[in-house]
Image (tube, rainbow, N blue to C red; front, side, top):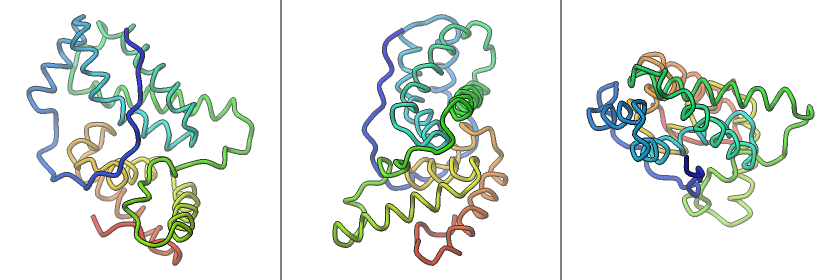
Amino acid sequence: MPLVTTPAPTLPPPATDSAAGMDSAERIMVMAALAGDDEAFETVIRTYSRRIYVVAYAIVQDVSEAEDIVQDTFLKAHRQRRSLRDPEKFPAWLLTVTRNAARDRLRRRRPQADAETFDTLVDPAATPGSALEQEERQVHLRRALATLPEEHRTALTLRYLEGHDYRTIETTMGLSNGALRGILGRALGTLRRMPALKLVETP
């Protein structure tokens, strides 16, 4: 299996929403990968690695550890792929493996997490103001996100920092549309009560 590399962080605009579930091309790709097609599995890695990285990073808040978790997740998927029969459940399975690996690392880690968190997921060019104002905003963002529950932090990151549409996030996190919107609404409500931070609009 090829080495998994994580793309450089960017801040794309949120994509438009579509119906929940995999599209046919994605389903065919995953089915082929699970059936043993190595080329299709490489495509799976390219398709999901960024999402897996974001989920891992939202938990461990460390770039190097998140990249290791991405690698470990796809190695496990490669070893177990013939036992994974339902392509529709594959993204949620990847997310479960990622979360478990990230939580394991947190349990083994020293009690105090690294100071670096979501800075690498925020594009300074997208934030108006001076360099000092941008840095202050990132500090507020880092502190605010760190206080949120893991699921809320993951959903916000995928939606607003990564720009994924609702369908993609629902598939990745194994949520219904209503559950996802509820999580985002509660998370945004929490952030809006923090006067130093203005992050996103109502979902």
